Length: 311
Image (cartoon, rainbow, N blue to C red; front, top):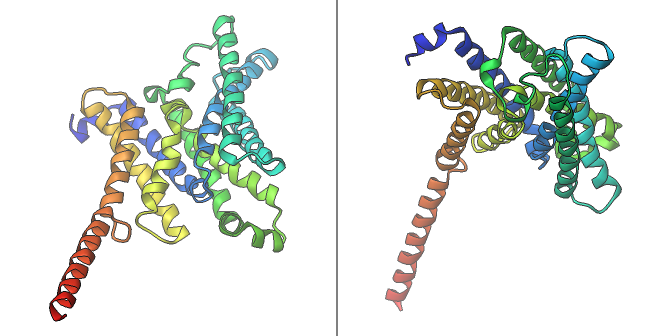
């Protein structure tokens, strides 16, 4: 399929621009999770997004009697529960000797277990509009609508705006948390704001790619961007670009190559970009390091041979 044919189709356009938006926001905000060595927090958030969306759905249908499939309501529920899950993992680490990776695993399993229980309740119940609610488990990019795209762009823009407004606080908390505390920045407030933005970046993509694969959108672009830049602003921008380009390219290839599932192919595309960055980035290239080591060994061998010849 040619690019002209691809963009002429409304569904394909929605998939392309929807996944690009998800990749851009997740790539930019995932940088802070990566630098804080909490990349898997996105996995916690994505799994916590399941009970969040289901609780929002049940509240809308049962309590308020409105449309339970409203995108803004579902995102709001996912953001609230996802933020609670992220803060719970960090609270466990602060108040005990449990490491952050273990705390994230505990938080993930608790919220995902609750999500699976709620999913069974919704599936077995007679709730109006429950059809397709399981898409939040595995994702379905083809169901993205104009309203969904507009909501993702709006919510993602809010998260990026929060990052820009609190840039200094986020940067200090990431690189020198003790100095940030000395300057009067409340750690819990900054952490809550930071994790809220990461949660938003994660949950806006759950409907399109599913909670299982969403972690790749948050982790892979920053890991690839780190190979090309040494500054925080540069890393955020490069990561956002990689996330957007990789997601858009993966969405196009998923259609052009014969209707391959969009989410998995985007993940593979982002991984290919990461591998290319690892191999060929100017400062951190594995290939260049191997060449330099080979040359250093050759130089050392020649030097030892000259010393042996002069004895």
